[in-house]
Length: 242
Image 1 (tube, helix red, strand yellow):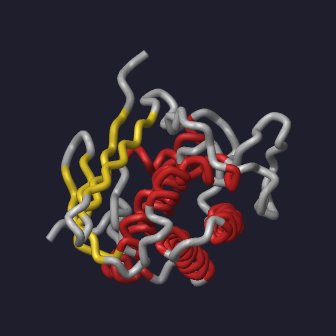
Image 2: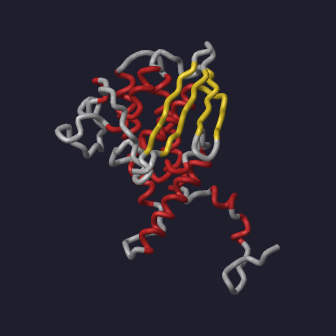
């Protein structure tokens, strides 16, 4: 088996303490390598179960996204979400860094491990983990999500499978994402403490809802990205090179 993909999050906190969290993904499937430690009770599947969950406790006793964030959520449960942290994210290709709130930094990490956790409602996000972009803005998230969706449709078409360039399916999937976010926020609220973990999930949910709005409005960001597409094309179908 090939070595896993490793992504390291380093949180440098104001009191001088550091927290390092290593994410390992199986290179062949992009599935998250599970934490070998016994999951805490609040991650049990039937506790605050998401309304759209399709899993059963007899085969999956723990909620995959909850288990994926458990160690970090428990560690930071007494930290306020507005705590300023300098966070480094080290990937195979480059290192990212940002000074931001703890909620934003945790949201970036949570988004990665939730997408790769094995949750059926989030599995469509897993390919994006291969090119993880920490601290992505709303605009970057919109472009990445829609681009990966359309790449998937191209991949399906090459194999003769049903495909569609419409974005209705993507909007429906992000509707399911919001249900998972809400369920996870309830779980984290149940462990008590401050609000850093819960607000990290709330921030992810805001992104999911904004993406749904953009999709309903037929992606107005495209008019900013491709303003020249309002000009008539040449007979070849392409605009002349300036």
